[in-house]
Image (cartoon, rainbow, N blue to C red; front, side, top):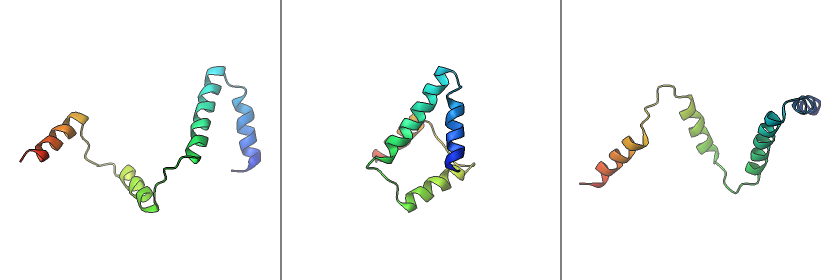
Length: 76
């Protein structure tokens, strides 16, 4: 995306209602803050995240199910 395209989007944002502008500012501020975070994923970790997000048939469980499973593993 070119700088001109980014500027055009930001100019359009200024025409949005104040609440939507605040939403955009919050998102952009969070993105900016993440750039200065000390936490970074390795290339392998990032690939694993992408792989798991792409798995539409992944098994999921609720927190309660996870806790029950975890407790069963702790009790011999």
